[in-house]
Amino acid sequence: MEISEKRKMDYEKEMNKLKSGSGDTFKPDAGVYKVTILGEPEECEFKDSKTGEVTPQIKLLVEHSLAKGQFNWFVGKGLTMMSTFGQLVAVGKARGGLSGQVITLVVKEGKDRKEYTIVEAAEIIKAAKMVEEKVE
Image 1 (cartoon, rainbow, N blue to C red):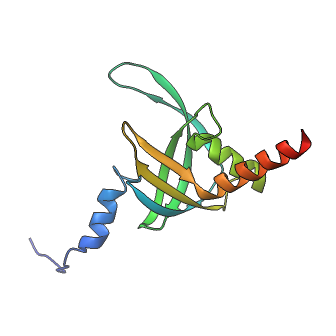
Image 2: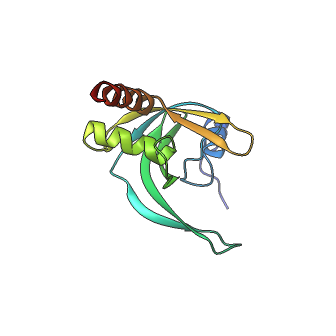
């Protein structure tokens, strides 16, 4: 057996792959990310292998600032405007879709789960509430 080329491991590249989650899935840790959405969301479901519970989700193809490559980002279909799903809907409605949009995603570690804030959505939602207050 012959080894044609010796290459040193790129630890930064490998660390980014590990941080981004399993395989090609975007699972952000606490931090700030610039996320480019590469297409419109697709509806899908997550089935818990232990309980059999089915959760509606959307899947987005994205690129982000901390690793090279394209990743699938799965987001549960939340029920409130401040859920990650609600924030994405606000951005999509205000901008005529999500494909090609660049968002700033802030991830914080909460008590029980991570908290996600899309900066652009917060601005859109705040502006919409101000308009509603003026109308009343």
